[in-house]
Length: 614
Ligand code: M6R
Image 1 (cartoon, rainbow, N blue to C red):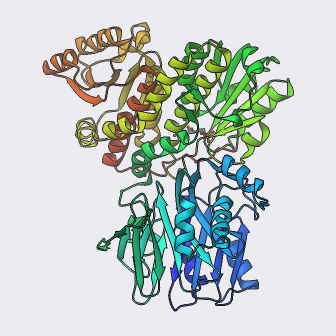
Image 2 (cartoon, rainbow, N blue to C red; image 1 turned 90 degrees about the vertical axis):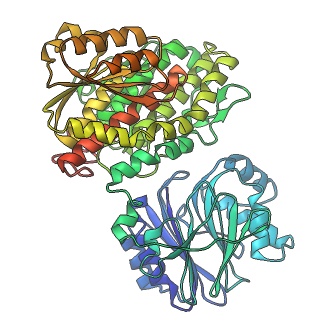
Image 3 (tube, protein in one colour; image 1 turned 180 degrees about the vertical axis):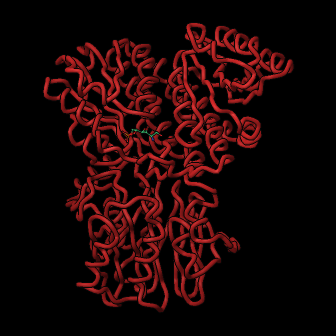
C-alpha cells in the first residue's frame, strides 16, 4: 500500500504535494519522491525514510513548477532504497504507482528483450518504460500512450503519469487500487485517498476500476480504458481530515477489519495457477528435491502470528504430509532447540522485526536449517535473515491489534502448504485446484461474513459487563479460538482464554456459570457434531453461548431457539477456508466490546505494535 498525489494548477506544486503525502503517511512509508514539470522538463527528487528527508532534499534543491506527481512508498517489490523510490522515469516520462503489477516478471523480460535497461527492482518501472515505448512508437498523446500500455498490465494499480511534452496534464488510471480526483477552482488533484485533498477541495470524484482520465487546470476528463467517455458527478466530502484517514471508520482497527477481503486478494495476486492447481511463488525458494526430502516443518512466531502458524500446522500435515511443530519465539531462543538440516523453519511475523522470532531464526540458521519468512514488512530483519521470503502484501497495519495481517498470514501459509503438497506429490492437481479455487473465492465470502457486524455489535453490548470469557474451537478452529481470546484481552482488557473444545471437560468447564459468555466455533466441518456437544455442555451449566455457525444450519438454529445462544453466521466454505471466516466475527466482537467499554482500541495500554525487546 502506497500513497500517490497529483496536481495540475497555478500554484507551486512541490509543497502542496508533500503536504498531501504527509496526509497519506498512514498508508505506510519507507521512501518518498516527487516529479515536477517545470515547463521545460521534468525534475525528480526522491529520498529514503520519512517525509522529513524528502523535505530536506527539496530544501537543498527546490523544484519549481505547477504540475507534478508525488508518492510515498511502502515497499512490495524491491527493498526500500532511493533507487526503488517513486517516481520512476523512462525517457521523458515519470510514473507513480500504488498496487502490484501481477505480470511484472514477464513484462520486464519482454522489455529487456527489446533493449530496455532497468534502474530499479520495482514493478512500477515497467509502466514507465511501456508508456515511453508507446510514445516513441508514435502514440499521439500521453493519454493514448497510457491507454495502450494499460492493455499489457495485469494486477492492481493506481497510476499517475507525467510527460515532458505535455506540460499541462497528468494522466491517471485505476484498477483495483483506490484513486480519487479532487476538483478545485482552476486546479485539479488526484490522490490515493481523500485526506490528501481536503485542504484544497471537498468536491471529489471516485474512479472506478477500468477507468482513466486526464487532469488539467480547467478540470478532469474521464473515460474507460477503451476510451468510452464517462460522466460522473462530484461528491461533497464533509469529513474531518482525521475521519478521512480512517476512511470514515471510528478506529483504524475497524477499518483494517473491513480491509481484509481486499488484503487477501492482494496476498493471492499473481500466485495462483488454477489450471495446474498449483502455487506460483518462486520466492518460497524451495526446489522439488528440497520439498521431497523435508523431515519437518518447524514454525516459529509470537502472538497472533503464532496463531496463524498453529492453524497452518494442520494444513501442512494434511496437505503436504510433513510433520509440523509450532513454537513461540521466546521459548525457542532459550530452549537450546535441535534443528535438523532437512527442517524447513517457517518464521511468521507481521513486522518482520520481532526480536524473539528473529533470535529463533538465527538459531535455526546457525544449525543449518533452511528458513522461510512469511512477513508483511518488506526487507525487514526476519526476511533478511531468512533464505526466502513470502510477503503477505496486507499493507501497513496501524491498529496494534493485528487483524488483516492475521488473515493474510493464513492465506500465505495455505499457499505454502499447497506449494509443498504439490512439490511433494501428496496433493493432486485436482486437489490443489479445489483449495486454490476456494481461496480465490474467500474474499467474497469474507465480505459476507463481515455483514454480521450489526448482530455482533448487539451481542457485544449484551456482554459488556463480562469479566471473563471462553473461546472454544476444534481442529484448525482451535487456534482461531486462541486468537479470539487474544484479541478480546488485548483491546477490551477482559480476561479471556481460548481452549480446544475437547479439552474443556479437563478443567475449564469448572468456570462455567450463568455469568460466563462462551464463544463456540461450530461451522459445518468434520468436527461439527463434537463441537455442538461441547456447546450443549456449556448450556447445561447455564453458560451464555455465542455460536459462530454456518448459514442455514437448522440444527443450531433449533438449539438456539431454546434460549441462551446467540448465533452468528458465516457462509458455507471448503474446510481449509473456514479459519479465514470464523476469525472475522471474533475480531468484530472484540472490537465492539472494547469500543463499548471505551478503551483506546487502536493503542491499547501496555502494548506496542512491534516488539523489538525481549
Ligand atoms: O510483528 P509480529 O507478527 O512478529 O508480532 C507478533 C506479536 O507481537 C503480535 O502478533 C501481537 O500479538 C499483536 N498485538 C496481536 O494483535
